Length: 119
Image 1 (cartoon, rainbow, N blue to C red):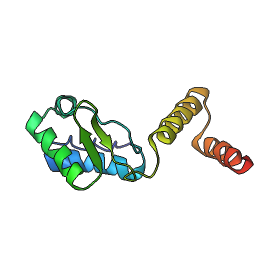
Image 2: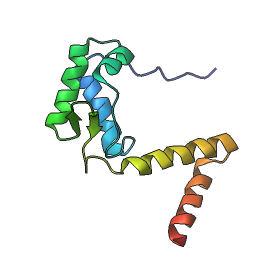
Image 3: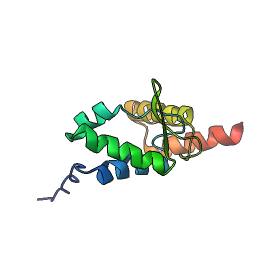
Image 4: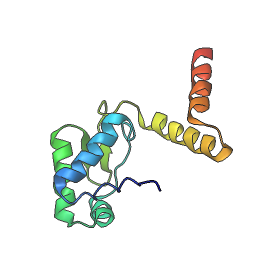
């Protein structure tokens, strides 16, 4: 019988939510210029009050990781991520295509390295 790791607890506080987005931005999962969900959607997703989600977004903005503009929403600030938004989008597409075709991670990385070196 194998034991399964329990799922991490869902974020419940503004600090928890900010931490998740902070990690996604710094790791490159969210690229420069990428739009974050609305405060309302974030509150719904994490089952917290909108004020809690808004507090998380304000903390990220104070850290310089996101920029909020009326009608444009909240986006990852330029230079905050390891990668620009389009690069992250293409990396996601590559990962999805590789998984769909049954290509392993190491083989997908090898293809990327070959393409990178060939240009």
